[in-house]
Amino acid sequence: MGCANSHGHGGPALVKPAPVEGRTHCGPWLRHPEDIVDFPLWPENYSKSLVSQALTKDIWDEYKDKSDKAGVSFKTCILSGA
Image (cartoon, rainbow, N blue to C red; front, side):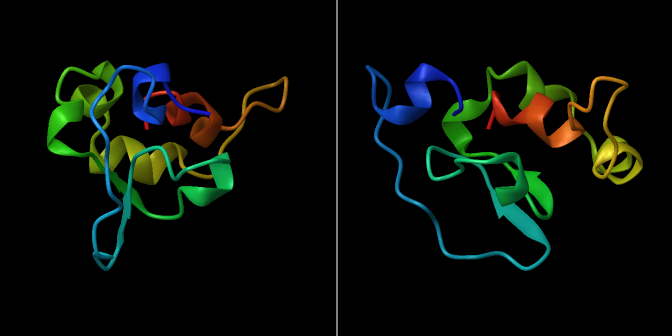
């Protein structure tokens, strides 16, 4: 999952950084919404992603465990930008 560029289809190659406590590094290694366990930490080259620009810690804390009426989780919605 994730955007096409995050999986090496014409975009820069990313290497998963060392863990940061309380954060989930976003990138092509995220395969499932459940992989996002903490507030997302975006790679520098994701700065044009609207998700990386708009998602704040407050929004994350409020919605991280919620789903819509159809059962689509908030994490599923942000995975495309991760």
